[in-house]
Image 1 (spheres, helix red, strand yellow):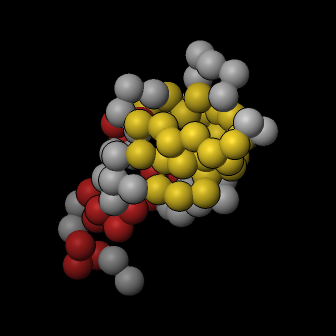
Image 2: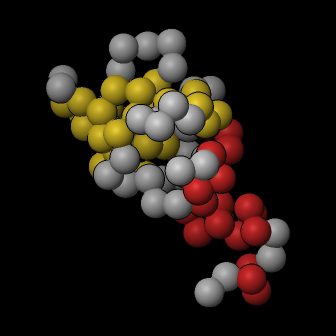
Length: 85
C-alpha cells in the first residue's frame, strides 16, 4: 500500500503509531481534525495536524495531509471531484 492509498483511503480500522511517542492503536473514529484511536490504555483523541502517523507498512504520513474530511481527501488527491466513481 502506497502513501497515496493511505491518504485517500479509509482510515478506520487501521493500526497506527504516533511517531516519536509510544502511543499506538487502532483508529476507531475520524473527524476533519482528529483521529480517535483505541489503545491499551483506552481511547485517545489525537489532533491530525502536528503529528506524524506511522502505518504497519512503514509509511509515515504527516497529519496535515490527513486534515480533511475523508471524502475531501479523495477529491483533493484526485484534483477533480468529477473523476470520482
